[in-house]
Amino acid sequence: MKYISTRGKAPVLSFSDVLLAGLADDGGLYVPETLPKFSHEEIASWVGLPYNELAFKVIKPFVADCINDADLKRMVDETYAVFEHRGVAPLVQLGSNEWILELFHGPTLAFKDFALQLLGRLMDHVLAERGERLVIMGATSGDTGSAAIEGCRHSEHLDIFIMHPYNRVSEVQRRQMTTILADNVFNIALEGNFDDCQEMVKDSFADQSFLKGLRLGAVNSINWARIMAQIVYYFSSALAVGGPHRPVSFSVPTGNFGDIFAGYLAKQMGLPIEQLVVATNRNDILHRVISGNDMSRGTLEHTLSPSMDIMVSSNFERLLFDVYGRDGAAIADLMKRFKTESVKLDSEQWESVRELFDSYAVDDETTCQVIAECHAETGYLLDPHTAIGLKAARECWRNKATPMITLATAHPVKFPEPVVKAGLHAPELPERLSDLMTREERFTVLPKSMTEVQTFIASKVHRD
Ligand SMILES: *Cc1c(COP(=O)(O)O)cnc(C)c1O
Image (cartoon, rainbow, N blue to C red; front, side, top):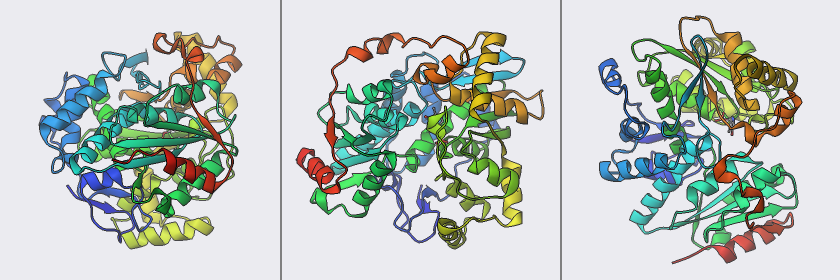
């Protein structure tokens, strides 16, 4: 399978190249040239498969010309064996036809483990085959950093540098990153804010000469392989509630549009999906586009669901590429205008987006209310992101005969503030993290100076 850029100009790449690349040269994002399609019969034959076996079947067509079956199978098996729950992505029933898909049984208790546990193994495998090394550099305000570090800690062919704003991430989030004491893991606490961290990563990608021959790779959600891995749980959960013999609907707490885009792909690949609900917090650009064709940057709001605090959802470009008939020039033009002004989609394209997605935005107060209500009704404790998903699901659910599955993107222990605000007790850390607060930490505080950061990285990378 070949991969092409959403802006039409960058070279066509193989899966392995896309895996190690960040953005395409033309500023676009890579997508498969054609999407694999599965027949109803084939999908029906997967009912009851263990998660890892299903993952192998769904992922194989995307990687087949780069990774052989035995290697893929081994990596997928290893990846999902790390998850604490034997079902990997178990469903919990809240009400009649109302389901929660628990995606937080991985090492960092958030859904990002599904993709990043696989990504680390895939990258290491490809690098070993090529005899190359890679330097991963990323910025995090919390969640992605720990999942990326957990995913890469065993990789022998890469070093990972994750920058977080010094004293501005929660202690649990910091400790999930800084207590991983592997030789190839480096945490930088930058004396600045999250935007400063991001800026440094961006500038370092633009000029990589400080690495003297090594190159940078990205693990943020523009990496295609992350989206690919996320397609699997749409299949697994739909099959568990009667698919493909009946359609199902999904509600997805959304920030960068990576997770819900995977749901859209599952649908394009043949899984009968009735509704895809985009759930946002007050950072609601996606809700404004879908409901009112208003694609304008707001100001960034800090909410109780911080992993969805985002002004621009980068993966939305991948969807626009499809609704604009895969016309790279049109996307390049649209994104260029969007850099400096608000844009509207052409009416035909906007209609297509509205046919594909419903949307709903939820504020902090309602988030806490939903946590309290759901706990009172069912005894189930939601994390704030999931609470937003559930609220949106209930608001947008058209056909109650169709199962509605809300994706639970994080364990409530990661975000105690809204739980306490909802009048409930903050949950305890699960067993495997119970000693997190006393584990040894390792991180380096650096000033907000590009030279200092790059000198630090260059002095730490392994070269062989
Ligand atoms: C990253 C994240 C999201 C948003 O996912 P996107 O793929 O960026 O839309 C939602 N909830 C949690 C807990 C997250 O960590």
